[in-house]
Image 1 (cartoon, rainbow, N blue to C red):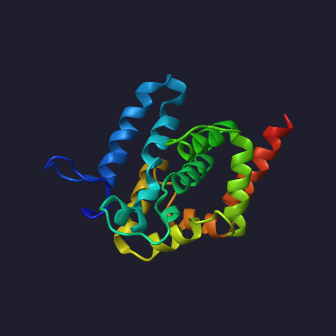
Image 2 (image 1 turned 135 degrees about the horizontal axis):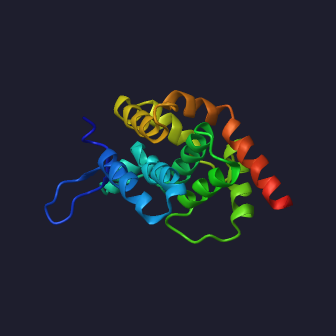
Length: 191
């Protein structure tokens, strides 16, 4: 159905890997890496780790087409906030929600001072300044029926039907997710 939204192009004549298929595969494999108490959390994180690949920007990038601002192709940040929202809505404790967010946020890099970096990133996104780019990614997904459908499907499957594209988008645009992250990181740093 969404055969134009891919996670990565096929190599050596293989078919492109669809984002929905890749997300399903990781959601099924990730729980095998942890104990029983974290299996569901691992599945949610696995399913949403590449959520940000649903943007036009990433789709152009992965196909070798030019993109004006390379930051708009970054996919981890949007997936991290999506996972945080889903985990929160599914009733996970604060520590697990932050762990899910950080595991996706840094899944292609190092974990420097996680709290400091997360506060800086979240404040920039909340104010839509400096290093911010999520508002543009949200609008991009919203502007495409196929992109919106993929984002909705990923959120629905990750949350067991409790989180929709609309609820996530609204929580991001209203700043609720950013405010919650900043509150939790502030509390964590105080401990």
